[in-house]
Length: 363
Figure 1: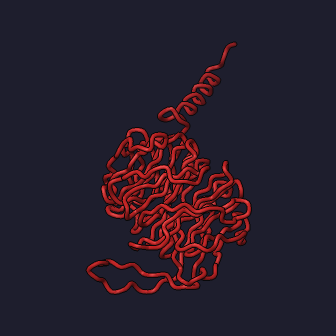
Figure 2: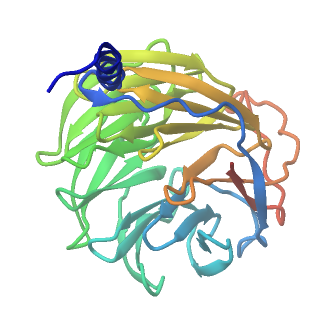
Figure 3: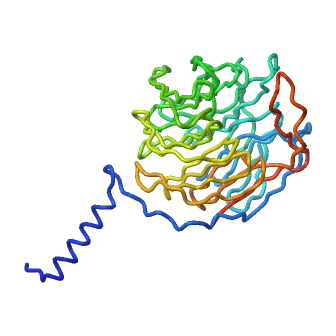
């Protein structure tokens, strides 16, 4: 077959464009248009039983169309499409993280206070269909906070901030397997879906890589220029970690196999949660200051800034719904911070009862 000069040029141009879409062996996503994320819904919720408006992590079960929201002595479950309250998991002490194991039909909630001698430091297990509590597993550790489900081993990992360790629980048998000393205060984790667990260590300024099959630390990687790493998300396909730090305030993009920091961006104060959406390559970072930082993974080696959206003070935790691409955050109204003390030189503002709300942002 013979091609005209114009035809050869057109084919060559197409091949060049096609080849340019592949960077580091993976398809390079086109960068989205800048701007567009805005508040589309505010869901006001009554005060949790027992008073107080403590709130922590959010979890989205996209397949079941549910959003799990930590709220004091309860976890509120919303419909991900119309934002109505589906149900509640009540009778908790102080809820923190929620992990969903769809293959087991179970959910797991970290419950407890960080105070020494607190009566409850445990994982509450509930049925995903009925939302009824079916079991409890004591961790015996201080500040049982973040939690994640590792699907290869079917283990649940709780990250106990003040005890500087992780409790490993058999999700099927609902019993503690072991505890791993992480040598320093711990924060939010991520899993790669292949048996590795990663966790931020704000005290040591590094990320700990844990082999879930052997329950041993495989690597520790420094996070500079970021400091006090707190929030984390992962791109499982391209094996990229996204960690946000509180001081110095940066979000970094890290290779999940080598620990190499590939990129970094400055962020606002009080970061607490990251969320990565695989379908669009969007990374969302929320801070206590009331900023939603939005980035795009243009390629496995390139993260670009899309926009920074002003939300509300205290909207520091988030999750993204991969179906609607909406972002869920939580916050409340706040009292002024207490006077500084020697033990607490930088006290934070406390939430006012009866003002808790879920903020839904979308395009």
